[in-house]
Image (cartoon, rainbow, N blue to C red; front, side, top):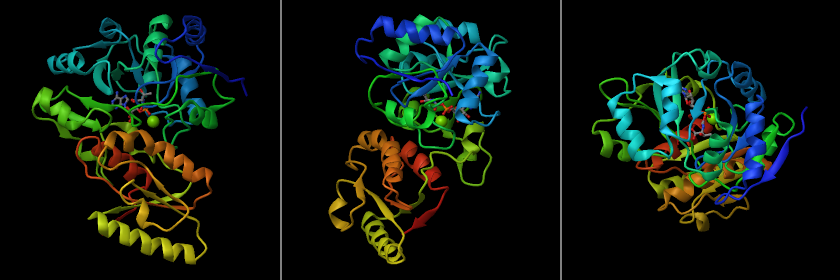
Length: 347
Ligand code: TXA
Ligand code: MG
């Protein structure tokens, strides 16, 4: 066990002295969790094999699941990647800093311990002042997966990181809640047609507006083999079993009520993940709204946090409403279906 320092930091004007202390830990090969616009990341020096290895150990992460390398300046890209495709230049110019991760051929400076043994490296520039200041002061690119225990819902506030990783990491920079709430979109532009390897905070529609044709990795469908190693693992799962209801909203509501009555009758502790629009239809204690279904940004920023809330209430089965797969809905449904281990009821 190591002592985990929790440091509150101003997200608009990060105090330099706090950033310097965190940067020193990174340079010394330690672990610092920090806020990004998507989720909290667990950071270590991306150029050090031993520092990266500590990330895997703290998270209990499978060795073949590569890390995303974070930078604050496009100039840093030359130190870690080569053969930058023209399409990547277009994306970086338009969407960085922001929730977009791009796959590149890696240079030998990046150890295999950072890329899970791959000869490619995933890179992104986060849109968060604390993250950017930490990157600048550290002077090295920072490898950072989401700062949760592997398989659990990703952390969208410092408290979530503390719950999962206290005693395992050196410091948590608490810069308040994350605005996007789902992880970055991961894209591979090395082939003729750009492929989304993980839907995320930057939408497919935004990518299409910049590049024209963009496709979703067919390997993301249940039972297929995804191109991105991390996508094959069980993920985002609360302790409770999750069932997602898909179909017309009024059918979702009636089917969820039926299942809730049934399970409650058997003594199972049920939680319902509903929306502002439907909360009134559920006469149960643990029916919690994930937000306004017409504002997907609020749904994405609340999703992981609400899954953790159900756990803290001791819920055994979560019955969840679903969303259309447009815009941010694609990432939201990807996370929700995975949290449910593709336990989906079509209504
Ligand atoms: O928003 C985010 O991306 C957050 C914040 C902290 O930046 N990070 C994050 O990291 O979500 P993580 O480790 O939880 O997810 C990384 C994903 C995994 O699905 C992994 O397989 C994929 O990126 N990935 C990383 N390197 C890759 C590579 N070289 N080729 C294909 N996929 C890669
Ligand atoms: Mg993750």
